[in-house]
Image (cartoon, rainbow, N blue to C red; front, side):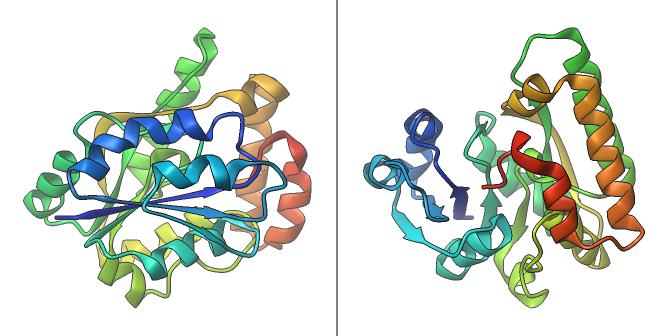
Length: 230
């Protein structure tokens, strides 16, 4: 089972080399790495080029960037990875064995936030529990999906925010996700920049507003500059 790992990025020059370096073993094993730049003003694309199979350009917006990468992908399974996240060891085997064994067509990993503050352990535990109970996967959890299923549902909806939640709702019609307990390590910078309690409160308010039909463009404005969306 060949994976296509798709990473959207925007102005990630400070960290993109470190993000892509751990993925080189997957490339050597025959998996594909596609980086989709959403109009970086720094040297992100140049730095990524030697460490990816393809670096392509797209209109900005995480959903658009990930859909662009998916259209170019050749793998049987698409893995959508944030530029500030690190996949667990042996992720390819975990996906290749887990999907058919559990009869699933899509899934996600548990998440661990990179910071050391004790409150982050509670935040990540609640994120993983909520996802396991609801069947909704967020982008921090490195979502993966069979390419044919992704194409059949039309990919990510072209919305400014909550594209991961919207896609999960559609994918659930084909069955619940495979929830792997191995962890993606995701940067805790959003929580550290805004304050942990403030960030949790913001995200719950945004998700509740989205549930009741708020325009994702308005939600993105409320999300603001504290969390980069590509």
